[in-house]
Image 1 (cartoon, rainbow, N blue to C red):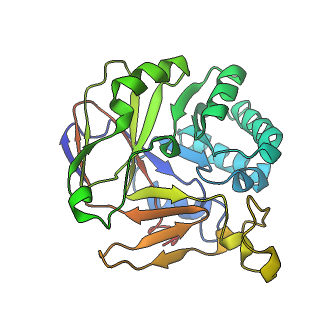
Image 2 (cartoon, rainbow, N blue to C red):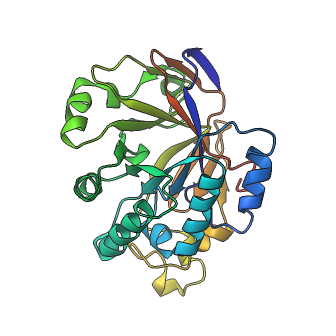
Length: 280
């Protein structure tokens, strides 16, 4: 990454949607990212893409990570994915259990649908972020003329900066969607966070991994239950533009490690360590 004007004011490690994979252990995270000197002051925990992943992860796994955060003097952001009605009660119950844990490292919640933004704001007073799935900016590295342009997210338009306070949103997360992204001064105080080096493109409600072991007539069911098969696989799609697409759970992402971030204000950088942890 290249920083222009302002470097990140803080850095966070994003282990959402990967922290239950066999190759991702707390020992590995400690060795790779903290033994040589702490460069991160926050962990992102939960799921951006799948409420099955969020709810089917054992509470003991969450608690282990929260204790890890406490022992390494890290703050924690709990990330809640878009929620299907069938999982609504389970998601709310788990979210509140994580927020109220005695470990006490959770001080933020990131939501990825507006319904959960309303629910969480009524249940807790912690800071609330509009997650990366709520930012509807066009993105696709296969269209060179579009991708190579400097881009300002729609999140910084007057509509959104006026809308966010009405929803109790104090932070916004964006992706490195283009060759250069520009963060302008905002009309209201806002915690801006940038995801990298992997950029989220899209998600689907049908999970390819959940269908792998099922009979043909049972494959590709809408919001199908699963056994977290995505913890044991990922898919790489080669493209003619030279950028691989990564299928991780229900998401499609691409790596944009050369993105230039030009910011008029300090921002938080959220790093997804897929390469270091053997996910890609």
